[in-house]
Image 1 (cartoon, rainbow, N blue to C red):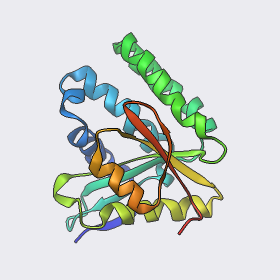
Image 2: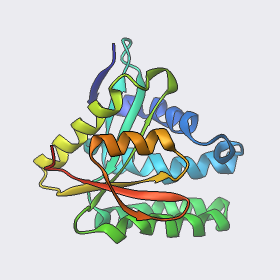
Image 3: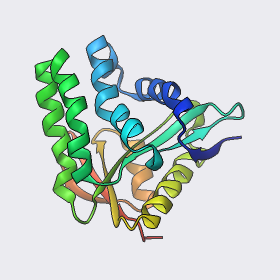
Image 4: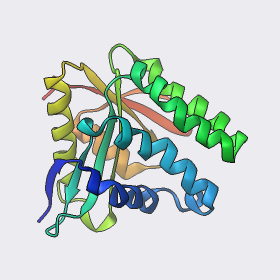
Length: 188
């Protein structure tokens, strides 16, 4: 049985492991790739916005999936500077990539000021876990009067795109390698 609950500091390493396990293999093949992936898609969120992060936990209460969210792009861009400096310190090329990638979310403010990442281990997918994680986040965003949340899904990620569309996300922009999608928090 899988339960969805608020992220807790004890979940940090499990969430980081899920981030690496669910990333494209080529992206995390090297140590620099793993460091980039964690700095870009995980650490800032769990360090700076733990109240907007939720985990799916197995029967042993170990995280098997998560949804991580920055509730405001304006706050995120200030907080992310620390992680961006870290990325630049080990790879200036990846730093430039991270800089431009982090700007994508700002294109959709004020309608979608929040942005999110969701990952679930393979053995726990297609069990309604993604829906329950997204529901928990949207409830939190509504409580905080945040009107919308967006994400970028890889163009080739058919399962992910199908899930988001079924959940109610709409395409905001085709970015080539990715598709920006968003959902209003008050939508049912």
